[in-house]
Length: 336
Image 1 (cartoon, rainbow, N blue to C red):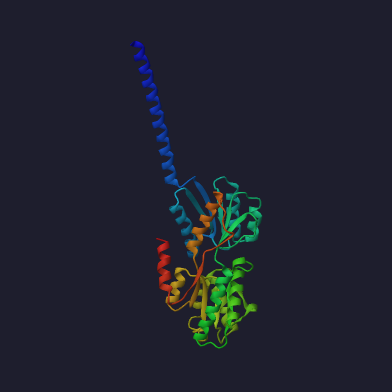
Image 2 (image 1 turned 45 degrees about the vertical axis):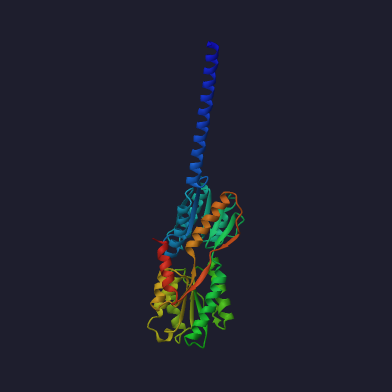
């Protein structure tokens, strides 16, 4: 009898031990599943280095980057940028410092000087995505941005049609561009020229004004255009909206330029407001928010070992008086 009780006690201990182990294993499994559901996978840190964080356009790119992090709890995004689009050394220092640190798993870079960035990223093993402006280097896995030449081509063709509707017979166009030699500015100039000439206009290539992508220099450039062309010019095509608005203001009140088509690029809020007010005529709108979102998304995919496309087009559209209010409302919703 004692022997039977002893055996029974041993069996009970064994059963209880097995039950505890089973419960413990199940508890641990639930814990891991909960963690997986909460984070969406291993935590990932992405460093985004923009041309600047001090402009409306780059604010949309930044909002898109941060939105991806909000939608994916396992992704941490750190957005940085230079103080202006001519603060070259400042951006290069940011890139150099961050590449040398162990804080990040991958990088999204919008270069101010792509050629210089090529040297900085040489040999970098962590994934790098170029955004807005491409970087011609094997370390860059994908370029996310607007097809600048194609978008400007569409803008150039539309500008000629608008100039015809405004009563112009002499369909000449002068460009006020960004930084001379910048790949994005060059692509837009090429696209403008192609679109304008295909539509029957004349692109005055020898009279391109370079204004470093800033409004005050664009204003001065427009004053020079007015001095050289006192009878007016049908189209002024610009590298961004800030310059187009400044150029339009420089020509305000000048009878020879009352029907000039002022073309901007970016489609930002101030452009929509200027179009609605009858100042800037039209803008080639980039989808800056999606650009930022898709750039971080591509970087995360690359970090996780997935294949990504070498070029991801974030799209573009033409904004004019007919759809400017709709575009304005959309942009405001991004920054809430």
